[in-house]
Length: 76
Image 1 (cartoon, helix red, strand yellow):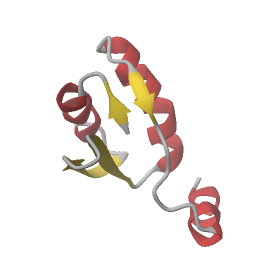
Image 2 (cartoon, rainbow, N blue to C red):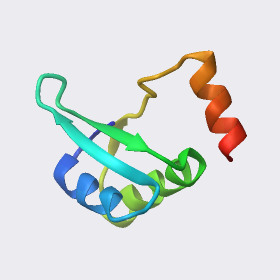
Image 3 (cartoon, one colour):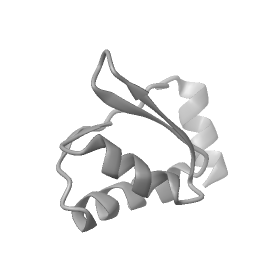
Image 4 (cartoon, rainbow, N blue to C red):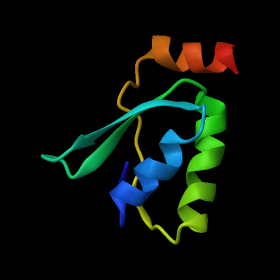
């Protein structure tokens, strides 16, 4: 995730139980988010951004394998 305010976004996201961890990737200027409840996280992210007046610049999954997608769907 890349945003207009990565620190504020990270602070808000880590407070929610859908997020297990957040790593700051200084090389990519992005946040690497470990979501344990993918469905909840995908609903939460735009709400948190809007509430904090944070612009989302890039949102993309880091693990796009068929197995990971299946895991997200089965867990939901």
